[in-house]
Image (cartoon, rainbow, N blue to C red):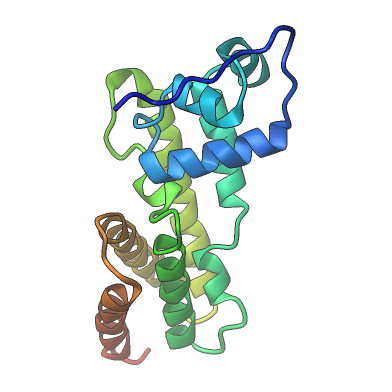
Length: 196
């Protein structure tokens, strides 16, 4: 099915850069980097391709700015704030991850972004992998209130893997209730950890 074409008016088009990043973030979150074309972006934003390139340099440049916008949104780490116990921290982290993964956009730009992609996007994929490593480090830091550094790193790696799995399953249509069952299984494992 053909996408509707936008009629161009004469003269340069101005646009709200902030709004353009917001629109791009939603499109990239819903369809991934490779699932969104320049035509999709310019049509949704309401500008011509030269304006997009002038403002962002490239589709990848706009994607990076959309990732920064996404990273600034409330997210899974917010679920760890004010936790009084390790159980509360892990439960809060997973609850927030489930909410983020099952909202209207379905998925997480960082957890699922460019896990696989074309060779020409290797640099961008590497940047996303680094963002995931940074996220794991921030989770480990949050867990450091209850665990030693090595144990916190190991649990953070596990929880990031769970978060990524939740995001993929949400993208495949899993409901919040279905993902909550996974969270419950994780919490059983956390509760079974030997005391320190």
